[in-house]
Each structure stands twice: as structure tokens, then as C-alpha cells.
Image 1 (spheres, helix red, strand yellow):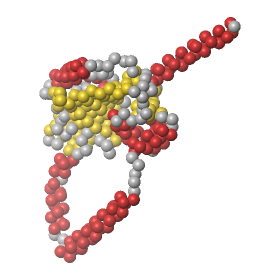
Image 2 (cartoon, one colour):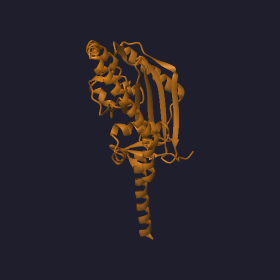
Image 3 (spheres, rainbow, N blue to C red):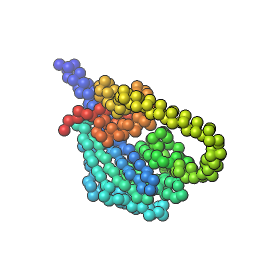
Image 4 (tube, one colour):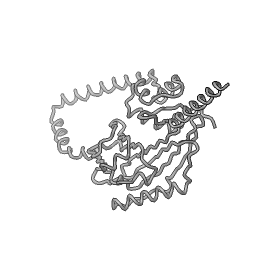
Length: 307
């Protein structure tokens, strides 16, 4: 009888320790800042906060006051006039009963977030010491800049960079405490204006070609154009490409509903930046949820969540 009681106590202790370990993995907080920089100097912010289901949720008035105060403090520190579009403030809460967690999404439009002048956009001066503590603390940072701009210079290199999607990704916002980031973007149109003289010279040179050569060139180009369009029509008539998001969902279903983010990259042969972007969009659409586990992230399928 005594041996049985000892075994029962040991089993209870081990079960409790295992439960606590599981809760520490799946109940840990995750914070992500997404900044979509606009060409007019404004920026659309989306903050994604994943917490334990029992964690306190900020009320609307607290959220509004926090954003207004943060932007006012940034305006004072940079000396630039900034404001928030109060009509853009949004707050959404999603609960996942299976993982005992909830995800809160805050969004707002920050007016005059960037400095724009002469075909250039620069930003980063708002990220002074203690900036993120005014919001919701340290987390990951994604910055997406306008498609018509190129990255000219950056003082704090991101951990990941995808020029095809104009996305910069820093793993830790706290790194900005040691070095203030400064990002400079240059308009592609501005670069084209600098070469306008050379382009005009090239056009005049082409105009000097003989009439016969010009007619022949145009004829060949038109014929190539028709062949190309015909080939495109035939291509789109039969090819049906499975969306990248659906590929991720199918992979998660076949993996029992959860998988490391790095494994998603490897199995689907996506870049890490592309995978992060896809999963961020899928989180916003309540298809998946990511939780940190050590240095890795676990991706959960939440299509069939309860409640």
C-alpha cells in the first residue's frame, strides 16, 4: 500500500511538471509590430499580441490613450508634427480555446510617420530609447515600404530583407536601444529623371536610323509581341497554381495541425521572409497562430477552433 502511494505521488508530481512545461511553451506571449510605410509619409501600423487566454485585455479607452500619447511623445522627440487618424483606430480579439490563448490585433494610421522630400522617404527617428515600452513592449518588427521606392541606405541592417516584397524584418526591437535605425528610400521615378538627358539622346539616335531599318524593327517587334501574347493566353488557359497559403494549410493538416516555422520553409522551399509574410497574413485571417518555443516558432492550424 505504501509503495502504491509513493508511486501515485511521483506520478502526480511528474504530471504537474509536464503540464507547467506545456503551459510555458504555449502560453508565452508573442508581440509583433507591422508597419506599412506609405508614399505620403503616413504609416499603417498593425500590432499583434498573443497572450494566455486568462491575461487581462486592454479596454478601448486605454488603447486609444496609449497610441495618442506615444505619437505625441515621438513628435516632441523628433520635432516633427505628427498625429494619429482617430477614425483608423481598430482593436480585434481572437480566442483559440484549443491552445488556451488569445490574439489581440491593434491597428491605426500614423500621420507624418516618415519624412518625405524630393523623391525620398526617411524614417526611424521615432525609435528612440524606450519607444516600444510606450506601446506594448519589445517584439518583432516588420516594415513594408512602397513598391515604387528602392532601399537606398539603412543604418541598422534587418535580420531579414526581401526586396521582392519590400519587406524588412528585425527579430528584436530592443536592438534599437544600442543603435538608432535610419532608413532611406529613393523613388524610382526620381532616378529616372536623373537619366532623362541620356534617354533623350538615345531617342534622337534611334530617330536617325534609316527608314528601312526602323520599319523592319517595328515589324519584328509587333510579330514577337503577338507571339508572346498568344503564348501567355495558352499558358493561363491550362495552368492552375495552388495558392501559397493553401500549400501551408495542407502541410499543417498533414502534420497533425502544428509544425515549426522553419520546417514550413524547408518543406515548401519558401524563403524565411516569404514564409513570415504569408503566416502573418494567415494569422490576420484567423487561419493559423504562431507561438514562440525557444528560438523557434510553432505554427498551429486553427481552422477548426472551438467557441
